[in-house]
Amino acid sequence: MNEWKHIFKLDPAKEISNEQLDILCTSGTDAIMVGGTDDITYRGVEDLLNRLSHYSVHKILEISRMDAITTGFDDYFIPMVLNSKEKKWMMDMHHQGIKQHMDYIDYVQPVFEGYCILNEEAKVFQYTNSTLPDAEDTLVYAYMAEEVFHLPIFYLEYSGIYGDAELVKQVSHQLNDTLLFYGGGIENAHQAKEMKQYADVIIVGNSIYTDFDKALETVRAVKP
Ligand code: 1GP
Image (cartoon, rainbow, N blue to C red):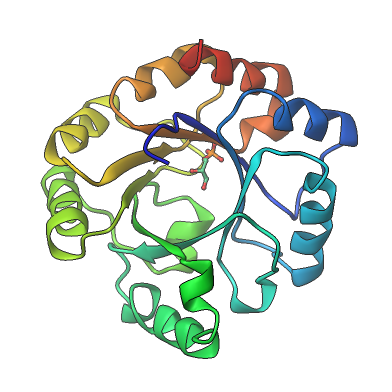
């Protein structure tokens, strides 16, 4: 994971053709992450995993619902929403989830991500009842992700809009060991390059479904 630069995030509730899936899986991206907020079902996740199983690309399930956890992924990423007003999104869901899967936890070794959601309009922001941090607060969350919680990933989540590159830069300076993931509104090679200057890994999601060819260019932009 320390070598990764680029991830495509697929939403199991959205349509993607076999041809497009083939192109994404063989694009040179470092991983395909399956995740989303709305209409995530066990069936939807399982169907997508079955379609991905033909490919050697690293497959990650980003868990958003306990009842949609499907076996067979290479990694399981679990968001801990640092800027939620509700403790359940930072602690309680995880406590319950680990309790239910305690027998497998050593085998699966889930990866916990410190999420900081910065787009008030994003579904995930509203769903997790988050509060919008200013730049100073965001830097404190980054500090806490690394120094208090020792999380391997700090994820700046702008889901749906292109974020503030200056803030991403400042956060990158705050972090030493924790990896910085950036996701939100990357639609073309230029934006991918700009955010990759500061983030260890960029995540491209929605533009796969809105302008596939441009989304594909983001791989080459950061992995020439
Ligand atoms: C969403 O961070 C990812 O969880 C990617 O964001 O869908 O805006 O590309 P976009």
